[in-house]
Length: 144
Image (cartoon, helix red, strand yellow):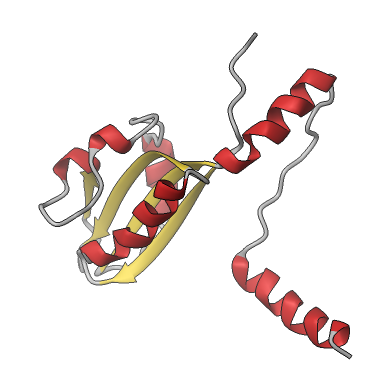
């Protein structure tokens, strides 16, 4: 039987300053510890004030970060094309965390879908601010 993976997603978070605070990684390690997601790959991208890019891979992270290369399920998955495209969105003098995650909680659904012969025709990620705004309009109506 072929391997059935859960859907994967990549996230891109930008913060001010050219270095990331190790505490910012705590939420990522906390969620991977639950088993709901699996960390596939991770790269820190910094853009200097003059626009020069610096890439830091997991094995190059300084002490104090709770993530190591053994935690990655597919180191190298994030390629040059992904990095180049997303690096354009980073403002000068800022850093970003590019993360690829496997949505492990969806693995069973993916397996059963494949076994039934069904085919996933589309997948769209809805950004959290959109969901939050929608929920803010729906929940008050439900509480009446």
